[in-house]
Image 1 (cartoon, rainbow, N blue to C red):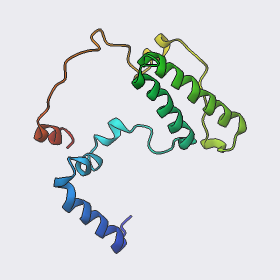
Image 2 (cartoon, rainbow, N blue to C red):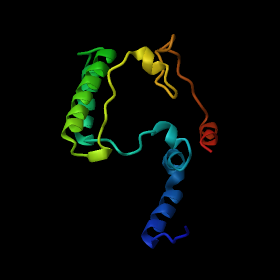
Image 3 (spheres, one colour):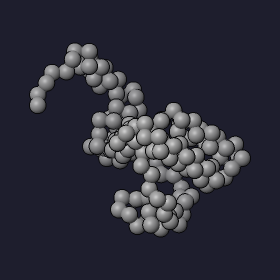
Image 4 (cartoon, rainbow, N blue to C red):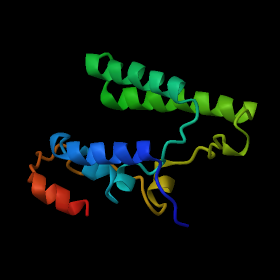
Length: 140
């Protein structure tokens, strides 16, 4: 189906294209296929404000040293599951609301196609610097 962009939308697209060299690859990234590698869930996050609040509370505990990173992430997971279970029970989001899986072992999930991945043998691998031009090429 062919259609014309509204002039205001077209102007915004041109504006971002013009500013792209000064935005550190942000425009190129979001216009590339790479964006789906990092954003597989899209924008449909149930009760985002509540879930985001839990993120900052728990990550703050890890950053301050009150909890180890693993403890903070385990607490974050438990807190988020409570919110999602409440939304599921209430049914306020209908067919689009969360549907939690039964709790299963980590090994079960590692065996599923598409991830998650088990902990790496070397979690502290040194950082790698990738040339900006090579990074941009990888997004095309």
